[in-house]
Image (cartoon, rainbow, N blue to C red):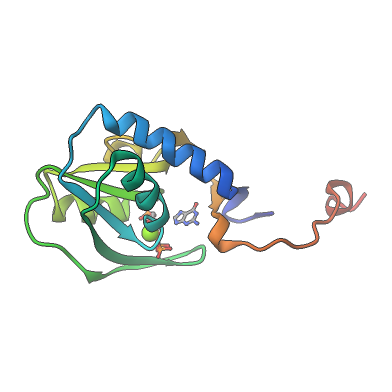
Amino acid sequence: MVDEKGMDFPVSWDELHRTARALAYRLDSLGPFKGIVAITRGGLVPAAIVARELELRLVDTVCISTYDHKDMGEANILKGIDGDGEGWLIIDDLVDTGKTAKIVREMLPKAHFATVFAKPAGRPLVDTFVTEVSQDTWILFPWDVELAYAQPIRARKGK
Ligand SMILES: O=P(O)(O)OC[C@H]1O[C@H](OP(=O)(O)OP(=O)(O)O)[C@H](O)[C@@H]1O
Ligand SMILES: Nc1nc2[nH]cnc2c(=O)[nH]1
Ligand SMILES: [Mg+2]
């Protein structure tokens, strides 16, 4: 779908699993880490995959909500975390504007911040990521979609 936020970029469970494993592979050489801080909710599934691959069993959360689907609002910090993050690995699904990443980095300045996807505006705030997508792309994660009828491309263009 194309709307004012740009083109949707749907990601399947398989693709997400493969890309999160690629992230774990890169992070393995940057550790060892004490544990993972998952940024809810989007970071939960990638954090589970990375925790499995890096054999990390200590997993905490920072809970932040910024978007209502595609609409950005004020960042609402529902749960923070103590300490400066030294030795910890922060995992989120993506950085877009970098608003969430900036808050988390200020909260845990010594942690390593990693995401599966990065858009250009947020990219400088991430230490490690795997796939860059353009700023006007909206990533659709498998937990946000269901299988449904898709109109043929020609019909969508009204031909
Ligand atoms: O770089 P930004 O512009 O801050 O956008 C990135 C953040 O937006 C999404 O979270 P959202 O606030 O939608 O909450 P959710 O993870 O619960 O879906 C996504 O999971 C990132 O955490
Ligand atoms: N699912 C999803 N959430 C976001 N939050 C900020 N940008 C995005 C995006 O591209 N996809
Ligand atoms: Mg999020």
